[in-house]
Length: 279
Image (cartoon, rainbow, N blue to C red; front, top):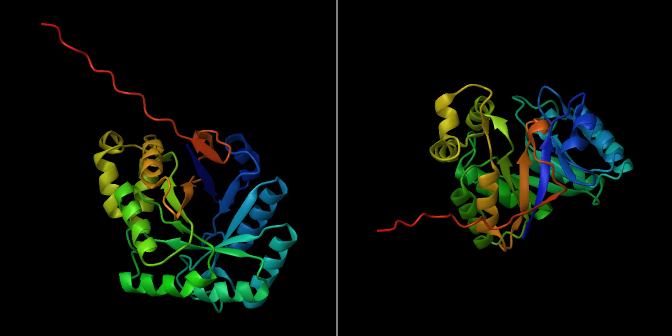
C-alpha cells in the first residue's frame, strides 16, 4: 500500500539548497504566500524550484495581490516555467491590497487569463476561526465548479478528517482531497499555529495521544511526530473516492523530515508480542 505525499514549504533564502536533501524532484511542492512575504516571493521561489525539476504548486493569496495587472504578470511568469497548478486562498492579510477580497474572485480572473491552470482550494474539517459553517458551505459551493482539488487545513484527528470527506462525498463533491497534517515540528510552534488556524478540537486529541508527553515536558526542542497520524489517515481513507493523499505542512523544518520520493509505502504494524505466564 502506498500513500501519495505532497510537501508544503515557505519561501526562504536556502530553500533550493535544503529541499533536495529531504525531498527529491520531481516531487510536488506547495509554496506558501504569507502576508509578510507577499506573492512576489512565492512566485520567485516557485520558479526556482520548478527549474530544479519539482512539480510546483504556488499559493496565491487574494488579499495580497495589488491589481489584475500584477496577477497577470505572476501568471505569465509561472506559465512560462511550466507551472500549471495553483492553490488559491483569501490569505491572512487584514485589508486587501487590491481588488480581491476572497479566493472566488481570484479564481474567476485566473481562469479568464488561462484555462490551463488547475486550481486548488482550501477545506476546513474543523471549521474556520473567522467564518461560520454556512459561510464555508456557500463559499465551497461557489468555488468548486472552478476547482480541481482541495487541501485541508492542518488537522490532528483522523475522525474529523474522515467525517469531513464523507460529508463532502455525500454532498456530491468530486474534488480530490489532500489531507493536511503537520510534519515534525516544535510543540510551541504547533500550538501557536493550531490556535491561529482554529484547530483546537484536534489539538486536544493530539495532547491526549502523541503529544501528551511532549507537552508535559515542554520546551521548543520537543517535537511532534505525525507518522502515527499519517498511518491512521491512510488506513481510514485508503480507497475513499475523494482521498488523494497526504499534504505535509513542513514549517521549513526540512532537516527533520524523513526522506521520501513522493509516496510512502505503509506496511502493517507488526503484531504486539505478549508474554504468556506459566503456572
